[in-house]
Image 1: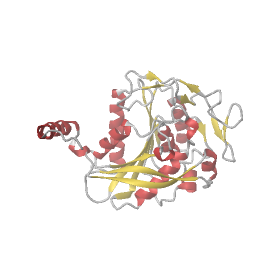
Image 2: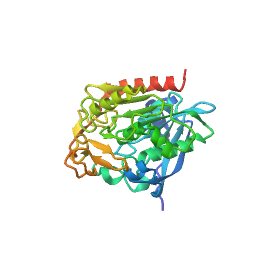
Image 3: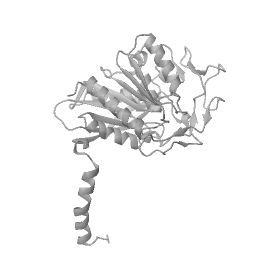
Length: 328
C-alpha cells in the first residue's frame, strides 16, 4: 500500500514552494520547450580521428536542447562539458543564454560510453572524440525546424574547451563535418593547448574567443596565448581573455572558494605533444607515442570558483553572441 501524505501537507507544498521557486528562476531563463535528442556518433582513438578512420565503435550519445522563448528559427549554442561531465556550469550557462533568446544544446558525451568523470583517468576516452560528437550534433541542429543553421555557435569547458578550440580546424571540418554548415563562433573556456596539430593555424574564418585564468595549473593559459599568437600571425580572428585571480573551472558555481587542490586529477601541463604525419600523437621530448603514463603528466592541479571572473566572462560572452547572432 502506498503512503499518501495528509491533504494539509500537499496544500502547504502548493502554497509555499511556487513563490520560492519563482524567486530563484528568472522568467526569461525558463526554456519554452525542452527536447532530448539522440545523436549517432563513434568512439575513436585520437589517431583514428586524425587519420579520418571511421572504423570506430558506434555509440548513441544524448543532448538536451533547451529552446528559448521566441518565435521562428532561433540561434543556438552547443555546450560541451569538461572531464567532470555534465555539471552545474552547463546548467547555469544554459539558463544565462536562454535569457538572451538563445537556445542551447548541452551534450553528454560520457553516459552512453559508461563514463561519469575522467579527471583521474584521461586516457579513458580519446581527447579528440568530443569533436566528432560536436560535428554530429551540428548535423542534428542544422535540420531542426526551430534552429537557424547560420546562427549556431560552439562553447566548451576544459576538455570540452579543447574540443571547441580545435573543432575550428579546417582540416577536421573536411574530415568529419557533414552538416553542410559551420559554427558562427568558437568559445573555449580554459582549454588544453599543449598539442601542436598539423595545419593547426588553418582554422575556419570565424571568431575564436578563449577564456582562462592566470592561476590555472591544470591547463595553463600561457600555452593558449602562444597558440593564439601563431593564429594571429596567420591573420586569424582570435582573442584570449585572462583573469588574474582565476583558477581552472573558475565559472563552476559549485567549485571551492578559494580554489582547492585535486590530488588525483591528471594534467598534461608539462607536456609538449605533437602530431606526426600518420596521425600519431608523440611526446615531443621523448619522440615516443604520448600516453598518460609519461613523466610529463602530473597530478594535483587546483580547481575553484571565482565569482568576479565569472561575472566578467558572462558579460563578454553575452556581448559576443549578441554581436555574432545579431540580437537586439
